[in-house]
Amino acid sequence: MAPTADMTSGPDNRLLDDLQHQVAVFARRAEQTRLGGVGQARNSMDRAAYLLLNRLDQEGPMGVKALAAGMGIDSSTVTRQVAPLVEGGLVSRESDPQDGRAVVLALSELGRSRLLEVRSSRRQLMALLTEDWAADEREAFCTLLTRFNSALSARQAAAPAPGKPGSAPEADRPGS
Image (tube, rainbow, N blue to C red; front, side, top):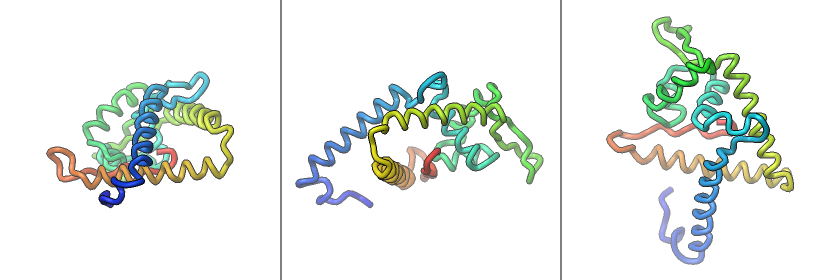
């Protein structure tokens, strides 16, 4: 939905200013800490690797194009981001079971193990940051943040990238 004059003027201005400021602060702090979790796994996996491994864990082996489309990024970006994961043994390239000529990317056992370790560390961080929140506050925050991320993805998908007719949104759900 495109903003209307009513949404960007009047009494909501202060609220919208506060919201954009809090989003900017959140983005900066998230990047500074990389929401990397706690303990030994803290900051041990960058955001791109985490999201790629998470996608492969949730959806299973897939080709670069499908992975890129599901994440709303270019195939060349996925190829570049996957290369160190393959080199590090976290992702393997396998023959596509439906078309032996094609290659799919799959989460290796080492990749699954590292993902579980990092996921656990990040879960501990979320528990620590929200330890004084009620369960319904955590639920409401997650619901609203998911809704906010979905709106961002929809806006990104609706606006063509420079030189491209459009882009696919990242599938936004917990863990992606």
